[in-house]
View 1 (cartoon, helix red, strand yellow):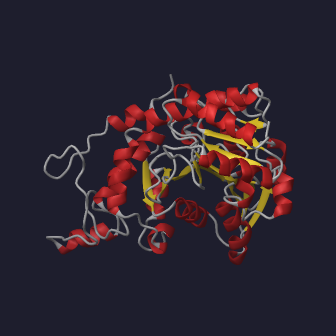
View 2: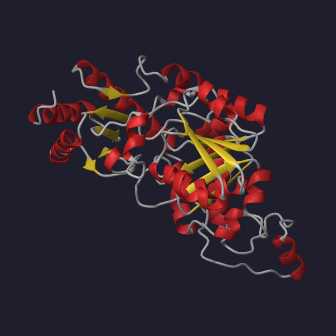
View 3: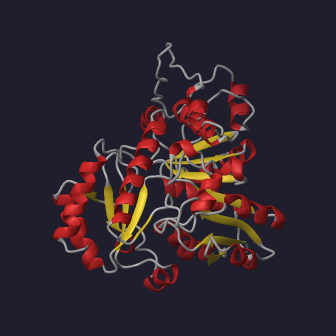
Length: 399
């Protein structure tokens, strides 16, 4: 078995101020010093264990960051107020005017919009490619390429990025590999496979309750220190700090992530098998005929399965909407964006989480108008869930 990310989290000794089994929650924006020199040293990052101001560090965020770094196998981590703030701060820290980025064409709509619409304001160019086509990735490299950006499992088409191969391309060309691992926590550890920086939307599987918005950055101590430097660190100066109460809540939920990922994956594989039996057009990386199955199998920690995301293609948004509305009425789950919740969530990606991607590019990437992204929940009786889905498929004349 590969390195166990859950055991790495559980092995941390994180006590509260009075010996609490849960670390104490920080309820302060600023911190006192008994000596002025210690404050000055803290400003310069030279007073380990001291806290200055919560936009920079606070104990609650440090506890969560340390746990996430342990999970990812990185030296350090830093948590943010959203997944998008984690993504944008990393990109702006690594790239400057005149630089070039290669990104997977299939990526979260918010990320796509930032790369396509926002970065040109700063004279940063982005080339979008099929990230599974390594030849196309290599051909896109320029002398000023500073970064390859991808998602381990792409949103919403569930393509699989070959992280070791992309890492080799980056190292050969002096670029950094940044990987969004939101869909596959614990299943894949991108840093151990050669990624330089790993980003997360903690909102999804890691927190698992859909009761907060948060993000994370896991990387070397050198990079995190640069990111939060008081003089020129992007995260420090743009200020995407996570509230310590939310940080404390996420830390508790993180300790059940290993159990939840196994159940999400088990349920998704069960539904994928049933979808296959009835001849439904679907996409799940756990199936052997999936184009990325071999790559994911090679990279993954098998005990956590192939993940909780499935997509089905009903060809038109009208058919997709009809089925989704019926499934909500039949208590399959909720018609809602986001993922990683304990109940099943489904949405028509092209009209929701990928709506920032222009229609012509949606067609180019192969995103159907009728694609439904399923985030399969933690249902204890997945057979009952399947029977409800089957009934909905029949009622809406989908099969």
